[in-house]
Length: 128
Image (cartoon, rainbow, N blue to C red; front, top):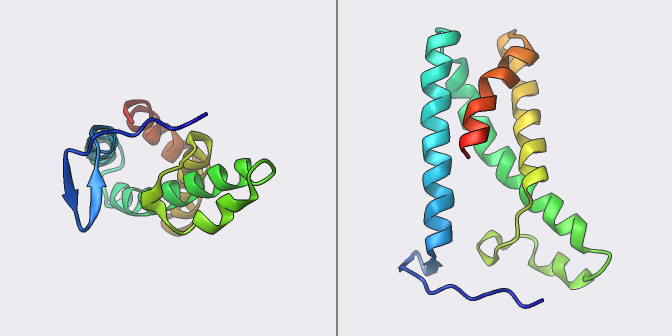
């Protein structure tokens, strides 16, 4: 199946930015803002900041790794493209795994309940 080529809206640092990328970035920004709002309300400290800062890169990394691993059996050449995030290819379940890992790490570092952090992340995850 050929991937549909989207017309870029603009170019940023030599990369084409598509409407899909803008929607994903807006969803991520709104999710982080919701996480910070709910975290301040429920936890009353900076734990939500730690969670947001760790969730973004781990979610992105998990999504990319899951995408690559799911395609290696059928298309081994996808491994050569693995470091090039701007070439596309992310999987939702990998992002979920990265976010859960971030919640686990923050719960250990901040001495918070792992379940309460996952509960805090539910609404922002649904928004994303």
